[in-house]
Image 1: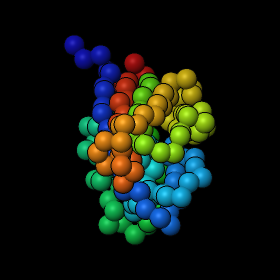
Image 2: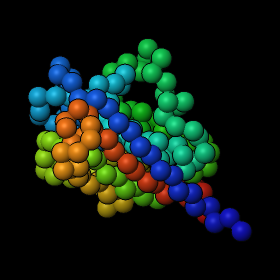
Image 3: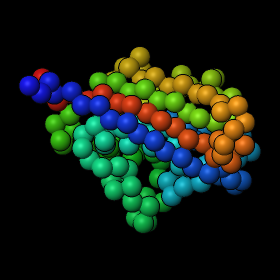
Length: 163
């Protein structure tokens, strides 16, 4: 018998480049490099959006918000997260909690995580204690360890609204 609970997993990656702002979880982090993308390239918010969309059976952010749409150029991922919440609500779901991991060699992200949690929780309509964000390095291995890019994984739990 279905319980009304759904789990989704999200993953996103973006290249680091000069001349772009570094936005993670809706927080601008002072650094010499930023993430390249059609939107603000907020890799952790994109992973969370993918987890939410996946849990609701709504494909992924590439389908929901295609990079071929000029209206989405440089858009804040916080706006896209709000739109994602509206999409999952249309399917009858609400967010229970999310957990995400940012994979980046530098910069140190711990000081910014509390504000990321606040920003994301506000858009999800849940308490910040239901949003967990962690950061880890890859000990200088791979594209994240070499500083070429950043990645993020996320899982999300949804429940059928009203259950």
